[in-house]
Amino acid sequence: MNKKDLKYFQNLLLKEKAKLTKGLNNLEHKIDTPSGSFAYPYHMADLGTETAEKEEESIIVTSIGDRLLLIDEAIEKIRSKTYGTCEKCGKRIERERLKVKPYAKLCVSCKEMEEKLATGR
Ligand SMILES: [Zn+2]
Image (cartoon, rainbow, N blue to C red; front, side, top):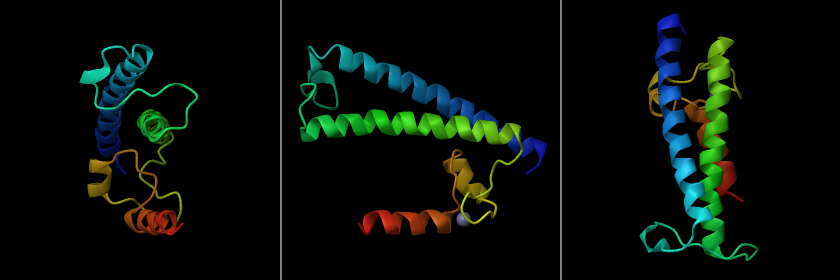
């Protein structure tokens, strides 16, 4: 990937990161203040209970947190110029895929394989 491309994807990643960080802050704020939660898109569950709602909500937080980690890793890869390479097969990740998901670590075929394995459980 040339410098211009790396710059382009770095911008995408930084934008995505800013967006997610903001979203995560909002979410944490909501969790801290459960009162009047009717306006929120998820239900506040009592801490320590294993309800479906609680699980759902932690999935939201985890997935944002996970994505932020992925974005940081991707930014790191841009710095070390290894960005855009599939971690599994070592091939280049499709540009179109990176435009949609700039923090993708796997190429489409490896990702599909992984998803098949995940849903097969
Ligand atoms: Zn691959």
